[in-house]
Image 1 (spheres, rainbow, N blue to C red):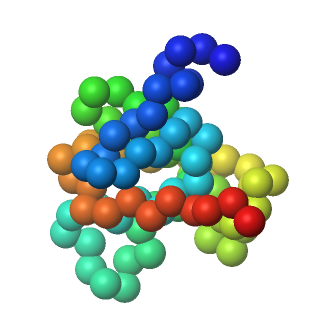
Image 2: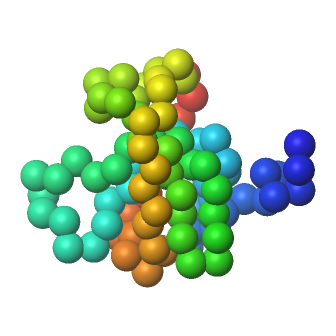
Length: 86
């Protein structure tokens, strides 16, 4: 595993890692917006790259295909919810 994959991504007091399944809520979204749910692909100093799943109903599974990539600026993130493995 490369060193970049071992280094956690710091979001305030929360650490997320490449491969974690998260839901990202961005600034300015209304309460009806479900946010972006997907797998953390990579991180740059300014952006979080999130692989988005085909359907929200499939997001709890590790077998979901990634069908798109969201590139989200860190200064636009309001909240990150990390999925906990069962």
